[in-house]
Length: 164
Image (cartoon, rainbow, N blue to C red; front, side):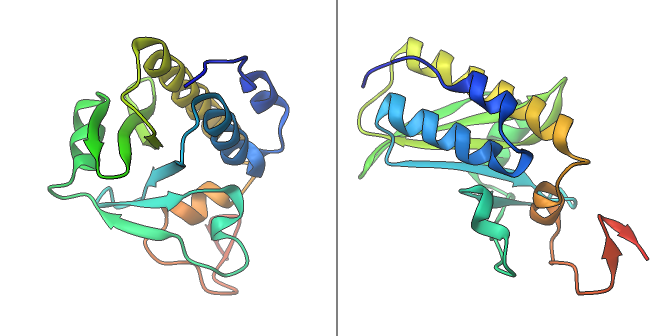
C-alpha cells in the first residue's frame, strides 16, 4: 500500500453530492482499497444506510440499510473508536465519521493487507474531513437527508426535507 499525495483538498471544492465519491476515490487510489463505503446513521438511530457513491441513492434507487443492534457498526458509533480486523477478502477498517461528538456515520474500507499507523491516520483524517463536508453541505443537497431516512420520501410529501 502506498500513501501517496492526498486529494482531500479537492474534497473542499467538490460539489456537495460528489464529496463521498472524492473520498472513496482518494482512499481507493492511495491505499489500493477494494471497497470504500460511507454509511450514514439514519434518523431513527437504529440503522445505517450504505452510500457507496454519491449516485447510489439517486434516481429512485434505495440505499442498503443495515440494522445497528448488535453489529460492529453499532460498536464503532457508540464508542467512536475505529474497528479493524482480517476477513477472507482482506483487512476491514471501519472509522467513525463524527463532528464534535455527533455520530454522522462510518467510513468502511476493505484493504489488501493490515494497515500501518500512517494509513489509519490518513483514514481518520479523511473521515474527519468528510464529517465537516457533510455538516457544511447539509443544506445544499438532499443526498444525506435521503440516506438518513428509514423510508424514501414519496413524491409530493416534502420539499428539501420539510413537509409541504
